[in-house]
Image (cartoon, rainbow, N blue to C red; front, side):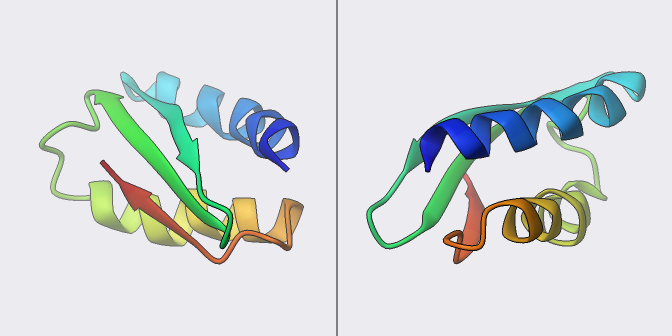
Length: 73
């Protein structure tokens, strides 16, 4: 599952990098919780939670059905 998540993040990363941000996979729990670290311009951005839930989480759930939620650490 972790490899599939890495591949999916690879698709998301260019969109974030265009705006000066990035995302790093930190951990995947056995119960499907994906922990990521937002980097660059995403740190402190008022839209980061929307990006996390409506962007990253939505895409990861679509690409990897085992994903239950995505959390920023």
